[in-house]
Image (cartoon, rainbow, N blue to C red; front, side, top):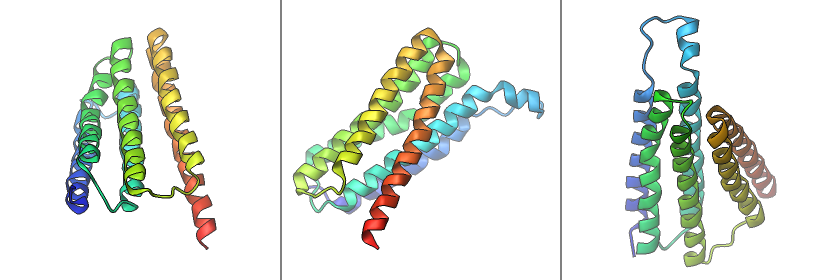
Amino acid sequence: MINKDRMLAITDGIVAIAATIMVLELAVPEEVTAAAIAERWPILVAYIISFTQIFLAWHEHHDSVANAELINHRIFLLNCLWLLFITLMPFATGIIGNDPYNPAAVLIYIGVLFMEQLTISIESRAIVKLNKCIVRDGQVIKFIRIITLAGYAIAAICAIFAPISGLFVTLALTLCNIVLICLYDRKLNVHVE
């Protein structure tokens, strides 16, 4: 078995570093004008999406691991794979900054987001299974995961035909995830009180 606290410590550190270095992908315009900043809107949108998605995934990771007493090597390896995709976020975000109208660039970006979400979902399920955790409103969590993964598939299809539309679908999906998670947390808090 793996020490849960050590896994959490390295995970939290890597997530914090990935979220922090992502800002380095935002090139400062030579002239600080509204037009110069507006010209860089795709990288700003990608940055906001990436930053938000990192912490939405971290939230899910935190909830999953908080209920776990046991962490085996499979979960540890899934956690490492999830962290791989978290650390690829700055790179994928930078690709959007270089060429936001290129279908391949947007597909790579969406692919990293998809794989990050897929791996955290698999890891969370493995934690529940190993620890025989009772997940309150498991159907709601499953619904959020399905919406998220299907949304990335739709974003990827859109990106093939109109790359910027793929970015907008990803932004809409991120906003949808925030609302769904807030509603889920609110529902749980109502049951606790």
